[in-house]
Amino acid sequence: MAANAGSMFQYWKRFDLQQLQRELDATSEQSRKKLIDQSRDFKKSTPEDVRKQVAPLLKSFQGEIDALSKRSKEAEGSFLNVYKTLIDVPDPVPVLELGQQLHLKLQWMTTTKSLLRSRTRVRHTHTHTTLHTHYVTHTTLHTHTNKMEREKGLSGQRKWCVRHAVVMEYSLYILWTH
Image 1 (cartoon, rainbow, N blue to C red):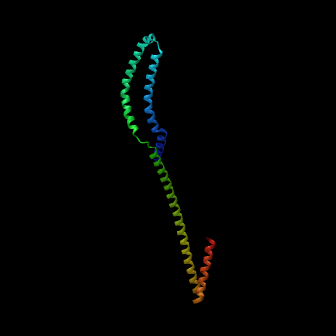
Image 2 (image 1 turned 180 degrees about the horizontal axis):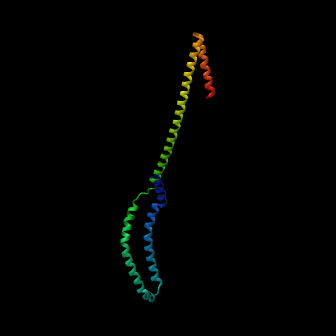
Image 3 (image 1 turned 30 degrees about the horizontal axis):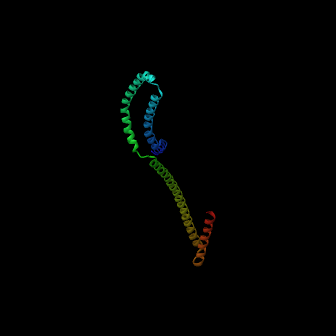
């Protein structure tokens, strides 16, 4: 549908409905005035004897024009009905342009949402892995420290010093590896 809205917007922008409405109003009026002016000029500039000779030919043309006019009145009536409807039609370009802008904004938001979800998954996985690694390391250190205390029979102040040294060593390890 988005491609259709975009192409519809471009079509109506090129179509220029308001210009068409002005042209349709002017065209029929100009044609009628031109024919009337040409008939007057012919009567003024042509001698009487030539007008009499041409009169039957002009009457034939006039009869044919009358027949064509009669046949075209129905077509014109239909056309005028459509034209009257078009006169009141608002120009759709502003609405189509707004729709196209909203569609582009929606596409951008959808892409951004997907990107943020992807980054969140990566961070979550990294955080989970890091926490698990720290937990395993802490458990290993605790086990190692308890084993060393039992083997050496440490207690009190010395026990605290050994634990403190192990924690400091682990902290330095973390600083250097990350």
